[in-house]
Length: 311
Image (cartoon, rainbow, N blue to C red):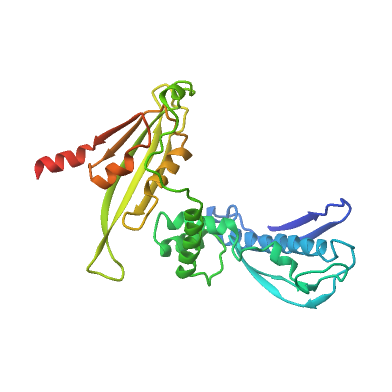
């Protein structure tokens, strides 16, 4: 059978519709692998659909910026141009003209590219998010393999690009992180008593490990990693536990306690909420846990206790 998929774009005025043939599939139905849409067909469909939709959006944006915002006069074209935009469903090249400013008002520049106001970055936020998310879990190479397996990404995308994009996201998040403090306990006991009853209790496990320096093989560095879990009591099975992980290089991070505090805050920690810290008692880990909550309990985890006894 032949299956034709069409894209219908309804313009804001409600009168004109643009119909575009997106993809035509020739499908058999004699074997199980013939059923439904294959991964290759899905990639082709998403890539083609992305191209048509994005092009229509860019054209509409350029149309709305083709006249002077002050007097309404049409703006003159000074030069042609194009921009590349990397998305989850392929890298697309779009038309980006340079227009001359109208003479009705004094401007800082004589010309401008309207598309610069729309494409503030060369990469779509969703693609940056997926690259950063996968790179936080596995290596850059495996992240690239996973994304290319399921998405119609540009084949020219390489490990260096994924690493650069992930670093850019990390730097932005780092810049948004607040200043570190010796104590994050807020208010006093009289105020905590009036807080609503907390949902669940926290358990935070923290440990450290050493990795070899990539450039200087004779030296190691310490990485602190941890996991924060918000769990609920019996009878609250319908509540979904919250699980978050964090990590940093101990000798480089200057906002370690702030980082842990923000993780706990993102899970809804209150000053009247029970929280248990598990660690091996290392001084660095102890300082990290202190003054985060007045309801904190600090324990040595059983693995390190047994290991110390055996030693």
